[in-house]
Amino acid sequence: MDKSTRKLLQKAIKRDPDAFTELMQLQMEEMYRTAYAILSNDADAADAIQDTLLVLWEKMGTLKKPEFFRTWYTRILMNRCFDLRRKRATQISLEEWEEPAAEDECTLEWKDALSGIDEKYRIILELFYGQGYRTSEIAQMLELPDSTVRTRLARGREQMKRYYQD
Image (cartoon, rainbow, N blue to C red):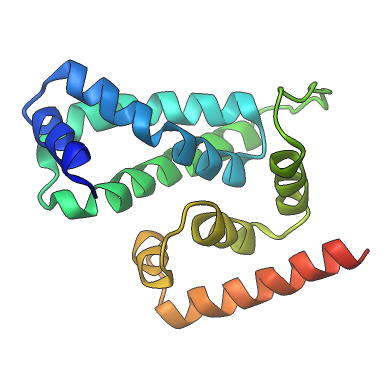
């Protein structure tokens, strides 16, 4: 974490709304990619992020170790995504066609490739490749043994390989 982000985090912990807003803007792209990897839907990802931001603002003072800020907010976001997915599963889902946002082909291809992969691998692939977390950090977030994360990463790579070969 660089000095300016650390300074923003310290101010946000002290309930500075401007610092919190700026800090969250810096994290928004990573948050979106994580939420989309779990929910596979732009609207649901936006809802999960909005819920997460509210929780983060309320709980910001409880962050004990600033160096674990990314891990902390990512875990909260993932829990919100899983909660939202469970809630959506109880509702009747309608197949809707969504016009893709103005995104580059690489991002659309990554989303398409991830959507065809089992969820337990998809989340790990996004956290590892999309956001740059180490396997030990992912293991901590997902509350899994590090060896399980490495195995799922390898199996996810295999599924990705098959996707690109087809």
